[in-house]
Amino acid sequence: MRARGPSERGIAKASAIVSLGGAAMVIALYFFGGTLLQFGRESLMRRATSAHYEILCPPWALSPNSVTEFAAQREFVFKRLNKKLGDAGSNIEIRIVFNPNYSDRQSSEAGARTYSVTGTTIRTKLNGRVPQLPDAADAEALLHATWGKSGNAQITKWIALWLVGQSAGTDLGMVAAQVEQHLGHKNVESLLADPGGEISSIRDRDALGAAWISEISEFGGTNAVRKLYAADIAHPNIVEAATALSTTPLELDRKWQLWMYAYLAGMSAMPSDSTMPMDMPMPAEQR
Image (cartoon, rainbow, N blue to C red; front, top):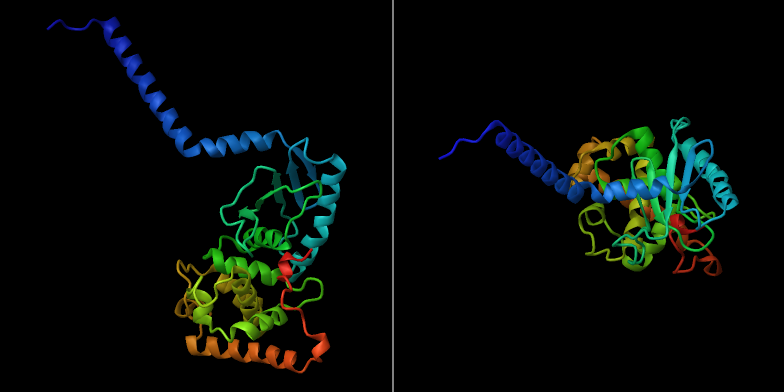
C-alpha cells in the first residue's frame, strides 16, 4: 500500500473539516433554523417604543401612528397591572411582536388564547388595521419579569387573569359563579387535574381558575399567589397545590367552596332583571 504524502494528508484533513462543518451547519439549521428565521424577520420590522414597551410589526402592516398609539395605550395597562404587584416592574420593558403569519395550534379552540409569551416577549397575530391584545398577555410577561420563571403554565395563565382582575366592571368571582350555575360546584381537584373532563370548556375552566387564584389572594395575600406561581408542579393536583401553600387539601377545598358559595348566594339575591347574560365573555377577553 502506498503511503500518503503530506499534500494528500492535508487535502484529506481539509475535506474532513469541511464535511464536519457542513454536518454541524445542517444540525444547527434543523434545531435553530426557525429561531434564526424569526430573528431575521423581526429585525426588519417597524419599531415603536414607550416607557415600558417595544412594539414590532411588519412595515406594511400598520402606520407609524398606529404603532405609536398602541404603545402609548399599553402604558395604561402596564400601570394598572404593575400597581397590583407593588410597582415591582417599574424598570422593565415588554416586547410585543405583531405578525400577520403568527399561528397557534390552539387558537381556533373556543376560549384558547391567541398569543404566546416567552419571558417578556409577547408574539401574537395581527388582524386588521387595529392592533389588539388581551391584557393577560402583558400580565404574564410582567409576572415573569418580577417573579421569575413559573412552575406550571396552566397556573400561570390563571394568575395572569387574576392580575388583570376586573374588566368592564365584571368581578372574576361573579363570572365564576355564573359558570357554576350551569355546571354545578367544581372542587379544586377537578379544576386542577381534569382538563377536558368535568370542565370541558377552556373558557369555563379559566374562569374558575382565575377565580380560585382570587380566593387564594383574598385569604393569603399576594405572597400566597407568588408561592403557587413559583411551585414546580409538572402535573397540577390538589396535593401539590396544598403543599406549595403550606396547607391541606381539605382546607384548600373548604375555603374555595365557602368563597364560591358566597358569590352564588349574592347572585341568587340579585333581582331577576339584573342577572348577567349566560354568554358573557371572560374578563380577559373583553376589550
